[in-house]
Length: 296
Image (cartoon, rainbow, N blue to C red; front, side, top):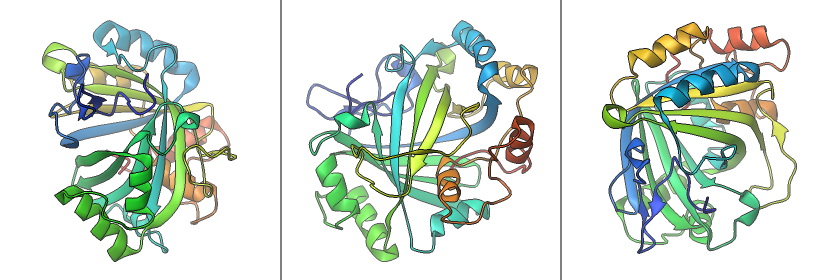
């Protein structure tokens, strides 16, 4: 997989601009050839033991296609999250506000291959009621840092200006970095908008925020657990929710960003924190709140 592309991300076209399709490709929600992409979707998240993943994979392989970027064990996803000094975005999630958002720089692939010219994505991900909205633009890493860290207008465009205004007005700064290994499955035919992701080895750090930094990371979610997400443009098909019931999965309110903030003691551990003790306790904690549709 190219170091600056990912299955949740647009794929560069012949001009170098990201194109959100790639013909597994119908499974990707983003299809316009613009460098700026936006979409709405519904997301349901589960926390499950990694020992149960083979059964899940077998069923998904029967119904869905493997993402073309994620063969041979998947791919890395690394994100730097920005927040205020008093962690406004973190608390918006913990308090369950109906409108909340996050700003991040995201890279798909080998983070050690990242240099100033590697394309990354500057994203605003927000939730409005139960709908997840994501807008992003692809930029060379040096320009993404100039925009988010140095507060420079790196190019024209309404979205870039919105990011600059958000960073400047709220005095945002890097707070946490998360990384994990992702497997992805995409729908076909009438289920082209469906996507299922399986994230393992969720880890992160609270310093040394350059993507390629050879820095120590700490597990934010116990290694014995995986985060599974069902993502759909309109509704998750019945066969998939039935599968979740057959596998005894419980909808979980879990945020990788919030887990990382709490793992490093930047905030007290909330009632939604996944403990690193007994797996049953972890699953019970994560599924204890009914408002659990998104990680935003």
